[in-house]
Amino acid sequence: MAETIPDLVSSDTTVDSSTWLKAAQQSVRSYCGWHIAPNITQTLKLDSYGARTLLLPSMHVTGISSLLVNGVEMKDSIDWGIAGTVRLRDGCFPDCPGAVQVTLSHGFDAGEVADVTSLILKLAQRGATGPGVIGSQSTNGSNVTFITAGGAPLSIPLLQIEKKALEPYRLTWGVS
Image 1: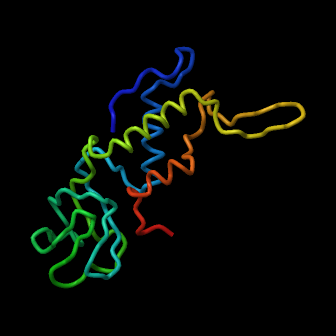
Image 2: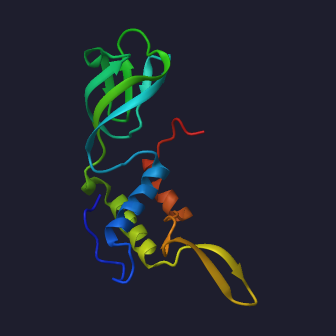
């Protein structure tokens, strides 16, 4: 996503703007099930379930440079789709945890997902300027206690409207 954001945290705290940006990116990645952007190359070890088709943890695959099944290179024996599917031309993937290792390039260029980039920047700003997650609150005494770690909020939770905005990028397979 974006590499820099304005300094959102005062100098008297121990958390800088890059920490908030990373926390915001992680909130989005955790919710969506993959990193979305930028386009990167990763090697992933995956479980397979005895089917001819394997679903990759990505919604925008741009290349597969290697696919090993139980240590045997299968790249020349597959067809793959941009939406994150890999299909063996012959046979099936084994029904075995960790049997597949794939090296793939995936993710959007940041400019293609400006809505996600903007959301991450807003999350980072909210995290940097917000007091934290409410741990307790009393009405009559007007007391509010925030759960923090060293003065920093524990996470940057997504609001329902933000989750709705991220739905087009959310992996739905493998979710229980």
